[in-house]
Amino acid sequence: MKPLTLHYREYGDRNAPLMVFLHGGGVSSWMWEKQVQYFTDYHCVTIDLPEQGLSDRENKFSIASSSEKVGACIEKIADGKEVIVIGFSLGAQVLIDLLSKNSNLIDYAMINSALVKPMKWGRKMIAPTIRLSYPLVKNRYFSKLQAKTLYIADEYFERYFQESSQMKGETLIRILNENMSFSIPDSFNQAKANIIVTVGEKEKAVMQQSAIGLVNSNPNCTGVKITGIGHGIPLANPELFHQIIENWMQGREMPKECQSLN
Image 1 (spheres, rainbow, N blue to C red):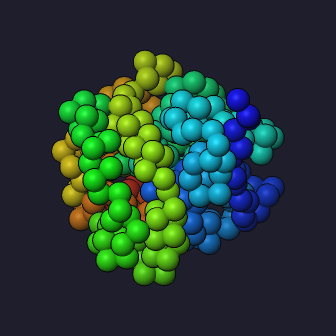
Image 2: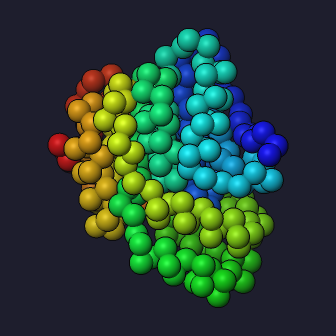
């Protein structure tokens, strides 16, 4: 098998601590545009996960292989610097797997909206549902509705529509299967990072349960529920998201929109 190539971009101060961003499924590194514009005092890196964005499409996506390649990428770029990794949804699952495999690589980890409760019955419906609905991916009206649920602003819609309409049905099925099969690795409790777990107040019950499960699985975890938000805090309210990151890393009290899960 050909080595997996991950596309990444670097921003900000390359002498500063490393801040890595891992995107969710169905989008790519462009979802972090507001973050890399804000955190200019950090060495920011956005990574496209396999089969998504500009990364290699010949090697098939899995959470396990993605975390290994992301880890290798971080080791290469960090060169001994402090490392902060922020993952959203699918990217958060990759981050959890990475924390479980390499307990000392990351200093600060932010796990946003990660599903860790396998959905057995939902998985059975993925392939037939995608095969029936796949033609809608190329429909702009349908994509507009999807973008709204993901808090994707008009300025990003064309990028979202272009990427989603080009994704193969088999790739989407593979990503969803990985997403809905994922559970907390046994070794997650050994991760040494300062970890914050966030979930939106309006997210599904299984997402709330997942956040609580993560907090209870590692003593270094702090759990936060964000009021008034569904699945997509980095896109829905970038200003609040930035404030949460800064307050967490600096040990300050969380914004008033945050409720403790601990």
